[in-house]
Every structure is written in C-alpha cells, then in structure tokens.
Image 1 (spheres, rainbow, N blue to C red):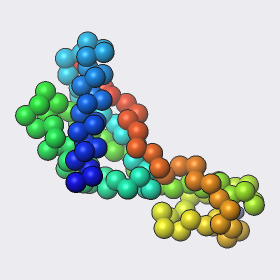
Image 2: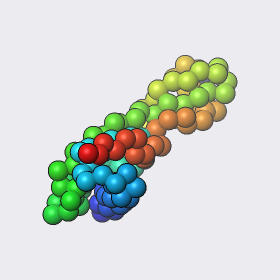
Image 3: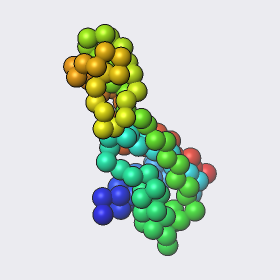
Length: 113
Ligand SMILES: [Zn+2]
C-alpha cells in the first residue's frame, strides 16, 4: 500500500528531526498533499496511525493540508485552480499550461517538545 510507505518515511523524517533537535516528543506533523500527488489524505491518516502505533510517535498528530491543482496558462498568463482531471485553462480553454501547485507531498512543519 502506497500510503503506508509514505507514512513510514514520515516517521523517519520525524525521528531524524527529534534527534537533530534533541527533542523528546513530536506533538504534531503537518504535511501538504497535492491533488495530483496520488495520495489519498484519509488513507494516509489511517496509515500514519498504524505506522506510529507502538512507537515513540504514537501520540503524534498528523495534519494534512490538501492542495488543489493550480495551473499557469501561457496563453492568457493567468494562474487558475482546476480540478485534478481537468487540466485545461478554465479562462481560455488552452491546454498550454504548467502545473504550479498540486504535486506536493511535503512536510511543512514538525512540532516537538
Ligand atoms: Zn488561459
């Protein structure tokens, strides 16, 4: 399962942060999950709880920010939000677009104590 391996690497990142910051506990971790990242937030949440159980991170809370897809259109030079399956400029209908947001799978914050 895809989300479980992501959850395991999250645990690795948090564990490294705890060591680096000489902290005892991770209270929460915040991740950004893009609509095009292929990760289902609910599945990641479930996988994280499972991966963290019986580890020092079992009380660590996972917050997931879902990032919608944004594209930059090179025809009308606008940045618009689009559905993940509708990769066309909603303004002019051009397919000459670059994805600027929506592929994220990033840890943006780890709160330690
Ligand atoms: Zn356009």
